[in-house]
Length: 221
Image 1 (cartoon, rainbow, N blue to C red):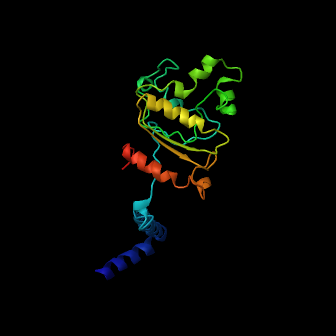
Image 2 (cartoon, one colour):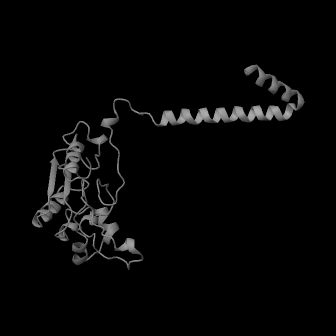
Image 3 (cartoon, helix red, strand yellow):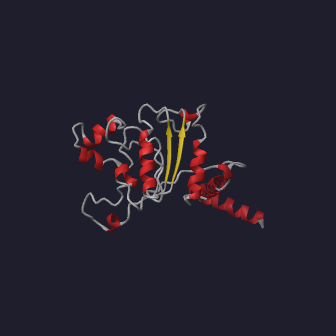
């Protein structure tokens, strides 16, 4: 049977060499494409980190929760002014609640009044000549609602950019409203330590406390 089909192909090639060559090329390309697709699928469906995948964490981009903070950004308004109406609703999405499920202000700017205010944040947010009323309106610790989300607070005592009193002010305001709050203060760490700059300091390992707290809040399994 194989010999018959080989003889038939040979006759076809002799009769029309160009057409036969194109047919062979098309079949070859099809086989090559199929094998490439199967190989790529096999590689991508495998475990990229054998033996380690069960210990790998990945960030979830979710507008309902907050974590981290960097110097120069606005204070933690999202956990205290989530129901403030700053423009007329345009569609149904604007009518959804902006309340986060949880908040993690880490070395946050809270105060807008001297001496604990971060000068750069205060200037950028309310201006240098802001009135006491405007300062109070933009200080989250003065505006904690009864339904504020639970919070994880973290600060280094030797933070010279944003003094630790900012975190203490927010903690006191949350406790006054009976909001669940977990607070961690460390002797050293400075400002903006994150993960890399925390190495070798007392604040090293804070992320494990945050992970445990988040798990307790039901943010992840």
